[in-house]
Image (cartoon, rainbow, N blue to C red; front, top):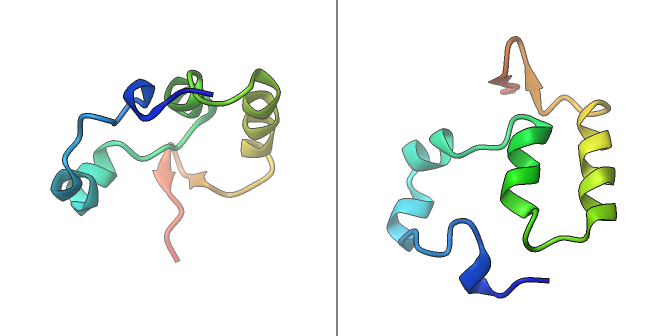
Length: 69
Protein backbone atom coordinates (compact mmCIF):
# COMPACT_ATOMS: atom_id res chain seq x y z
CA UNK A 1 0.00 0.00 0.00
CA UNK A 2 1.18 3.52 -0.72
CA UNK A 3 1.56 6.45 1.58
CA UNK A 4 -0.26 9.74 1.21
CA UNK A 5 2.61 11.03 -0.92
CA UNK A 6 1.81 8.41 -3.57
CA UNK A 7 -1.88 9.22 -3.73
CA UNK A 8 -3.05 10.73 -7.00
CA UNK A 9 -4.68 13.73 -5.34
CA UNK A 10 -2.22 14.27 -2.48
CA UNK A 11 -1.31 17.75 -3.72
CA UNK A 12 -4.92 18.96 -4.03
CA UNK A 13 -5.93 21.48 -1.37
CA UNK A 14 -8.81 20.62 0.95
CA UNK A 15 -10.75 23.60 -0.44
CA UNK A 16 -10.41 22.34 -4.01
CA UNK A 17 -11.10 18.72 -3.04
CA UNK A 18 -14.36 19.70 -1.35
CA UNK A 19 -15.48 21.92 -4.25
CA UNK A 20 -18.32 20.36 -6.25
CA UNK A 21 -16.85 21.56 -9.57
CA UNK A 22 -13.52 19.87 -8.80
CA UNK A 23 -15.38 16.73 -7.72
CA UNK A 24 -17.39 16.69 -10.95
CA UNK A 25 -14.23 16.94 -13.05
CA UNK A 26 -12.49 14.14 -11.13
CA UNK A 27 -15.36 11.72 -10.49
CA UNK A 28 -14.87 8.05 -11.27
CA UNK A 29 -17.31 6.80 -13.90
CA UNK A 30 -15.52 3.82 -15.37
CA UNK A 31 -13.05 1.04 -14.75
CA UNK A 32 -10.16 2.82 -16.47
CA UNK A 33 -10.40 5.91 -14.26
CA UNK A 34 -10.77 3.78 -11.12
CA UNK A 35 -7.68 1.78 -12.03
CA UNK A 36 -5.66 4.95 -12.66
CA UNK A 37 -6.58 6.41 -9.29
CA UNK A 38 -6.01 3.38 -7.07
CA UNK A 39 -3.28 1.48 -8.92
CA UNK A 40 -0.54 2.65 -6.53
CA UNK A 41 -2.45 2.09 -3.29
CA UNK A 42 -4.56 -1.06 -3.76
CA UNK A 43 -3.63 -4.68 -4.44
CA UNK A 44 -4.21 -5.98 -7.97
CA UNK A 45 -6.86 -8.41 -6.69
CA UNK A 46 -8.89 -5.53 -5.25
CA UNK A 47 -8.64 -3.50 -8.44
CA UNK A 48 -9.76 -6.48 -10.51
CA UNK A 49 -12.75 -7.12 -8.22
CA UNK A 50 -13.72 -3.43 -8.15
CA UNK A 51 -13.57 -3.18 -11.93
CA UNK A 52 -15.75 -6.27 -12.25
CA UNK A 53 -18.23 -4.58 -9.92
CA UNK A 54 -18.64 -1.68 -12.32
CA UNK A 55 -20.61 -3.95 -14.63
CA UNK A 56 -23.00 -4.84 -11.81
CA UNK A 57 -23.86 -1.43 -10.32
CA UNK A 58 -25.40 1.71 -11.85
CA UNK A 59 -22.52 4.11 -11.11
CA UNK A 60 -22.93 5.67 -14.52
CA UNK A 61 -25.67 5.75 -17.06
CA UNK A 62 -26.32 7.21 -20.46
CA UNK A 63 -22.94 7.70 -22.08
CA UNK A 64 -20.87 8.11 -18.95
CA UNK A 65 -23.10 10.64 -17.21
CA UNK A 66 -23.68 10.13 -13.52
CA UNK A 67 -26.77 8.35 -12.34
CA UNK A 68 -28.43 11.01 -10.17
CA UNK A 69 -31.57 10.35 -8.11
